Amino acid sequence: MPTQVPTTPATPLQIGQEAIWGESGNETASGTTTVLAYQHFVKGVTPPGAELGVVDGVWAAVEVKICNKQGAEISSDQQPWSLAFADGTRTQTTGLNGGDLPKPEYPTIPTVVKAGDCLRGRIPFPVPKNQRPAKIVYHPSSAKTATEWIVPAS
Image (cartoon, rainbow, N blue to C red):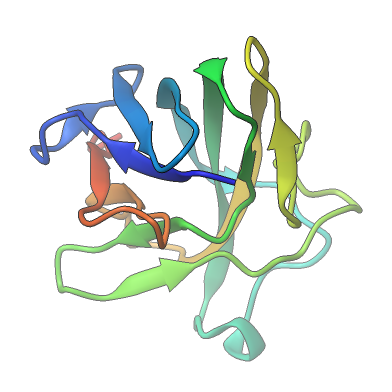
């Protein structure tokens, strides 16, 4: 499959703003990636703890949507997404799904998105209860730079 190459400026976007990307390689595709929402304190099976790298943790969720407007098939999953905190730390996705985690869930395994289709869902993250991330970061391995969205203060 071709690789995604973001064409949106590297400056942080606001939640709801689309990042526009194009593809490079023998086949081409173009589309958008959007963070639709960030929610702190979402219900999960159990609160995340030290086993997931947080002390006094809660679940947060990022709702995202990727649309393949035209061209070759692409694939998407949770792995390129992370949360960045003001102190320079990052929280990665856990790959957990099911149970009480927020629905609809974004796929944990690569999922094909054909031209004209979109893929939308929520990605859970373990975060410290009293610390909100500063940014939501999307950085697929095929992209030279990450695309970021600012997390509102509340």
